Image (tube, rainbow, N blue to C red; front, side, top):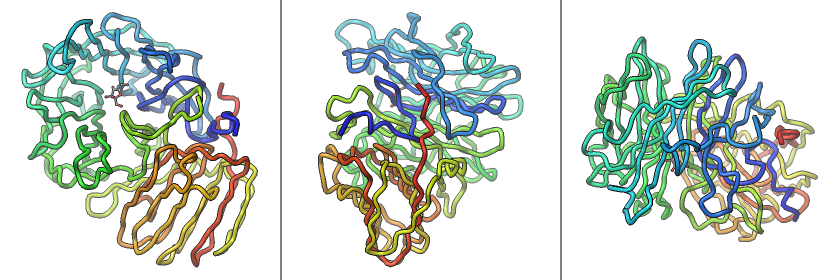
Length: 461
Ligand code: FRU
């Protein structure tokens, strides 16, 4: 199958080169901005890493902004990368906070020595023209218990006070979050930590904070998790914990890592970031990839690597859980509608579909291209690859809920996202179908509604 057909229709991906974390998510004057970690020169060794940029008026139809870096790693304080960060809309524009990463030449472990982590501010009137870079914080400014790994600022305001959280690794190799406060968003002071009661991973990356209905959740990506029974041997995980009623992230807190829930139980999900859009919705976008895994994400010499999830609206669920549903805007891409009864088969010309199943029954399955089965039985949902040329190292993932009531499956040319019970469970995976047409086979008692999906990326590059 030609590589071109693995280009997605509604999952953001780079034209060529490498993409990882979503960065700087925001909505300004109606326009949505999605920045991301970007190495246009990948797979060249040590390809510089900075920020790429997409914009959209509706979260569905995207345009690339510029054809290179939106933020280039072009100062000595980010010589090894303009790393992840966030955007804070302000009057007259937006403030972008991110980490400059510098690895010094020499014989260093790059944990306790040889690395600088600098927090940088760039202001922009419109998200597109970038002002000068201002270094706000250097390693000497962080608490003495920190190693050199301090990064990924998330900044927000509460009343007149600005707050920042940073992911960090302490000298005892424990992951935690640093909390800083500021009166103006420019001069910052340390204001505490958010830590687990018991060690939970050696480093926490990409901290974030969700506030819904007056409650807070701390989202973070702990590293060093491969030994845990639910971790599928994967070092880097992404999840959240509810912050205890009565305490605030900004006040520093001890969180119960035992309450950690993965945002997504599929193969490809990391570094999620949330933002609140102009209508007040909390929207999450994540990297559909992992820093370290045995899966292949650019098979057969593809010239681009990785994509982002669709925007997911986050709402509060029962018992401290957060629900994630694809934003309603995605339905604008729906085209011809089909129904598929139990035992039926449907063939579509493009590998793009939105599949809805209401009333799932005790057990059933949807098989895509005879290669990827999405199955459910007694509350357990599985993704199973029957063809490794399509899975490229991905085999099987399972996750459970009390009972599977409904299912939504978004199928794109090389990305699949499954949402169960109105977003109680999500499973994202890359897939690399080898056939020209998409075949859907369903086994179960229910009726599937299937829409062909249009291409929101058309004309992006
Ligand atoms: C997470 C991460 C971040 C860092 C960025 C570098 O995937 O390692 O901690 O800022 O990627 O690209």
